[in-house]
Image 1 (tube, helix red, strand yellow):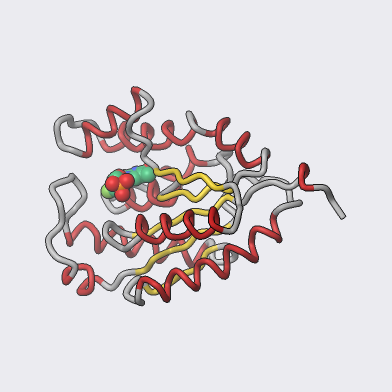
Image 2: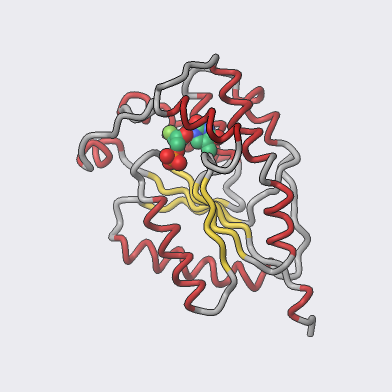
Length: 214
Ligand code: FDM
């Protein structure tokens, strides 16, 4: 039996369109794992507060600053790179990370603007690869029913439709570690599905090395 000290945490990511329930589900998972005594940290990309890059992203998203599509894309990626070392240390120390959005949002939102998928993915190579991605898939009319969007840059139904189709492509490509879930399921049912998969995952990955996006 391998001692606890050698076990790493799991790297779990939530992806999906705006208002798909990522924040609710990621919080519920964090609470559940913590209640089970698992050291767990909740993160969210973009991480808007703790760096200058994050602050630029925030002013871009709230429409107070304009930037070329390529530039903001690379800033979203840089925002992940600037948190890489800390994330790796936490995982290696046995802490599980539950992350609301990651590289796949980076790709999906920029490809939805018309940029090339391979170009969009390139700066993500070398970042840590998640052990699992929970893709909360929304039907567009369901999203529309959830009421009007906020005022941030991407919160428009037509744009979300494009984002959603890129997520579907990514799911086809990455399905070995993606779990596509129906975002219109009841909150509690979704949570049960996610918790069950995560608990198994925690055991499976504890002694596996961390992987990188290639
Ligand atoms: N977003 C998020 C991107 O365009 N690229 C990225 O790399 C990431 C992580 O930022 F519209 C978009 C997705 C969303 C916005 O997301 C902020 P949240 O859900 O408010 O954190």
